Length: 326
Ligand SMILES: O=C(O)CCC(=O)C(=O)O
Ligand SMILES: [Fe+2]
Image 1 (cartoon, rainbow, N blue to C red):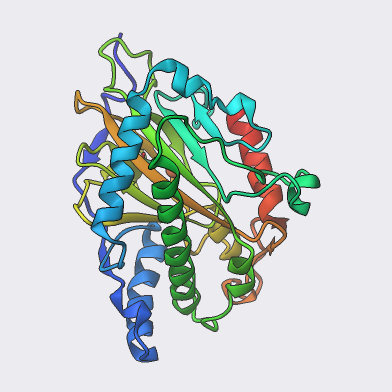
Image 2 (image 1 turned 180 degrees about the vertical axis):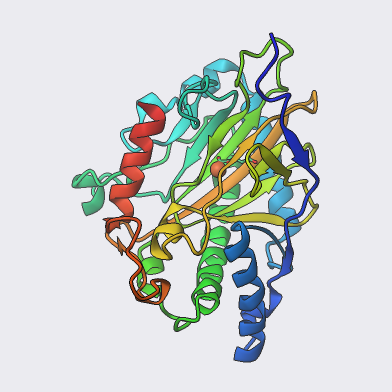
């Protein structure tokens, strides 16, 4: 049967590559110069590559090693850390457990969720705050935890740097998003996509079309490719071709809500047509769970109404997990 994926036109990569080294410069003029490039990309489709980000290559290589090793592990190792054993959405999630695109078949991916490590007596855990608690760690993989935790910390730092850049990009005070970032929650997700099967059901693919739920996403992908970003014309998809050493950064729904869709949270999907296994690692920077997210006054023209009612970070994430795991 013909797949709905075949008829679609896909353009080659048209996403900007932004050198973000200047965001760490002591010169405000240099920081603002990078912010203007971010602004253009965020107003366009909210997807861009970043280079000169300062994340050590060795750490990235080690992270991919751990990711591949985990997914290659025997079923018993994976099921010992199954997400069903966690009350806070951590651990291993088998193939076809999530449906990112409403109406499409479940996603052809398996994953592993990691969040900030919180002990059972942490007040947020006692209160059963959404997504807060201890991680599940696979047994017999000694370097898995130190590597993923080191990477997690590095991504938190990079996210905070980018959020300062986004504040400048919105022509706000550079510190504007600091309260959103101070008690920020975030999720690291290791992903494995098998090759797209020849007998896939209509619409079946690695990850269904979706926009990301949180603030910003920092994505590492291997050399295989398969990420596609929705273009401006119906049915047009842009390949986010892997660029060695670069991250793909995209804005999530919370930034769109904050900016009344001026800064865009664009729909994307994964089709692993390579015939090979694909691995990727998104880091979802959600922000302070209690942060109220509502339209910024500077993003409303006179007479214009906010498109979204105010929400909180936690409220929005809960709703999106409900929809995609329902
Ligand atoms: O694997 C990828 O390249 C993208 C994954 C993604 O979009 C997601 O997990 O939200
Ligand atoms: Fe995504």
